[in-house]
Image (tube, rainbow, N blue to C red; front, side):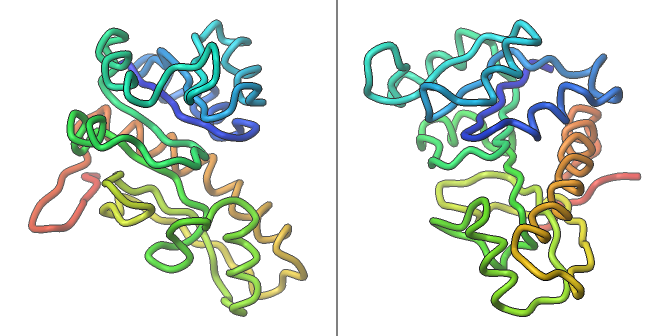
Length: 201
């Protein structure tokens, strides 16, 4: 399956996808997109000889209005948002219904929505005095973090002393759960039945 990965930061989840032994023979990362021109994750993509695209209105960037056509040209079958901070254009959402997923560094539906990304999420979790956090992989719809949840994994944070400690614990989970979900989607084991998403064993 030909995959496009969208990133905004250093790309540790992109690295986890590319390093996954389960995904090597079933999924190909065909392109990496970012809302930044000089995105740290592009260095990872280049190490794997993967084409990169910057999105936006600046010179040399791919306009968001042209994204749907570019994905079609690349024959992309599936999209993974791995730390991407912008909303995906509605035309792309429509073209890829049930074929776009996002990883979120908290247990949705709590601690989600606009502005809830990166350390902002972990600060909110820390300040709430929550005793568990974790990662969520969900389908993407037209708004932030509201698509149906595919998989979640928890981690005990009852003894943490800072948001940064939460971030470190959650990131380890992200690197496991995202390749797991991609593998199960590629394998046809993820189903949407009666408003619930299930992963077949």
